[in-house]
Amino acid sequence: MLEVEEVERVRSICERTLRQNWIEGVRAADGTEFAYTRPSPGHYPWQWFWDSCFAAIVWRRFDETRARTELETLLAAQRDDGFIGHTIFWGGPPTGFRRFTYNVLSLSDTMTSSIQPPTLAWAWRIAVGDPSQVEGIVRQHEWLAANRDLDGDGLIWIVQPDESGLDDSTQFDPIWRRRAHARPGFVSLVRRNRRLGYDMRAIADAGGPVCCEVMSNVLYGLSRLALGQSSLTPALVERMYDERSGLFWPLARPELGQRPPLTWAALSPLALPDLPEQIRRRLIEEHLLDAERFWLPYPIPSVSATDPSFSVKDIFFPGVKRYWRGPTWINSAWLVWLGLVRLGYGEEAGELARRLSDLVDASGLREYYNPYTGTGKGALSFAWSTLVMETTQPDPRAASSYLEG
View (tube, rainbow, N blue to C red):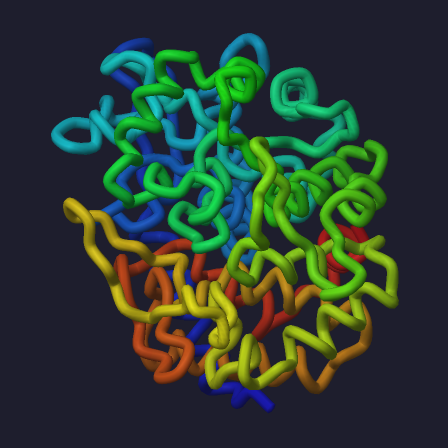
């Protein structure tokens, strides 16, 4: 049971962080107004796509106008064809080493030419209203269907690990190998994809790799449901669910010769409202609640603790942290918490909420946390970690938005 005093402390931390991370301005190049929540002012000053979606979900609790403005700022960056980039540089393009690692075609680009998980329509449904009435959101989904659906089954593919938002997750090691995120060949991958204009089909035709990643398609599926479009869940189950292991696995071109490491992404379909109950129960009972793998003292780790690739240490390569290789992230914990609540695992959902609250109460809103000790790591005042509010103070009004689809 969460103590009232702790819940109020956590709520105060969340509101204070969102307000201090908020920035407003006018882009000098064209006079476009913007207002958004910086993921972490000292380390992540620009607008990241899915970070803003998560921030808007929590902003609705404190200021509904800002929740809407956050998402409208994403739409203000949209190209005429519907595309919205991974990162939007409202204050000017990246400089220094970031010029070589950010996914831009030109040093004057106002946003990257790569994507992040398509979370906008779902966030709009939770924080604002009906996304199907917003032309820009509909056009973004039209762009995704036209440009990222490789096989015509509705599932979308990514051309770099960072398009998943999970950056250096160990699941990508056997796919991109030495060109995986934060590895020596990553810069060469960025250069090759720039040359091909981040065109998924051109990259696939050039030998790839390209990846159909589980969690990215879960969030895309939630956004499609929010728009009133057909469910992606049947395609996810048919193509990515392995009955023998009871887990979901990514697809890749060229095809993998080995199964990738077990990461939390294999459990992320728990967030889907229409996942078959038998599959959901297996994900929870055989995997999520396994105290050796995922149900650690501060769950859930981004990699199964029994997987050889699991590590809670920061490993540096030219100043880049490898941070999806073991630590706990609050956004991923929230997504699996949805599955616990939906299927009636109330005690376990409450326990997960308590442990997440303890993390924030003790360490503040950090980018990620040690799953054994709870020690906060990475960026300070990390905005999307305010999603802890969604577990510590569930909002009954949002049930139709994120619990039922």
